[in-house]
Length: 162
Image 1 (cartoon, rainbow, N blue to C red):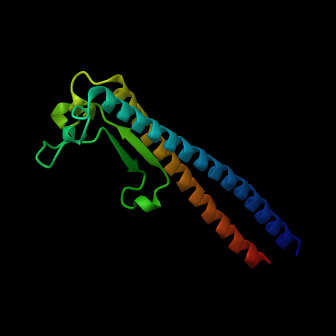
Image 2 (image 1 turned 120 degrees about the vertical axis):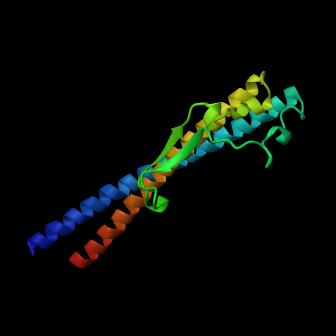
Image 3 (image 1 turned 45 degrees about the horizontal axis):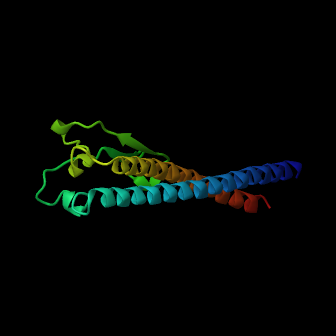
């Protein structure tokens, strides 16, 4: 009987620790989402500033590639440690690729000319930071889901031990 009580006590202690970890992860996730929003809004304002300074024709959708444009690759890609099933991934990573025109990795800021305004360069940096924060937030969400699943397993174990 005492062995059952000790195991139930151990389960309860683990549940307490996991609950605290879940709360910490939730707090981290909220902070990351706020940072994502701040960076994204800042990037949009900087793009608007660049458009205002350079004029609507210089910084507009007409500079973006169309269906007839040459193919290109993204400078930043996201990968998981479980490529066959991204939903089962335990970690997401951001892969940065260097600019290499021969392999199709081009710098999109060049679509807006050679001498682009500093506000447009700053906007690009803000959006890069936003992508990094989104990857961090995704990893936090994955950790949170794992903790929640472990907590549910412990709840079931506790029910059986009762």
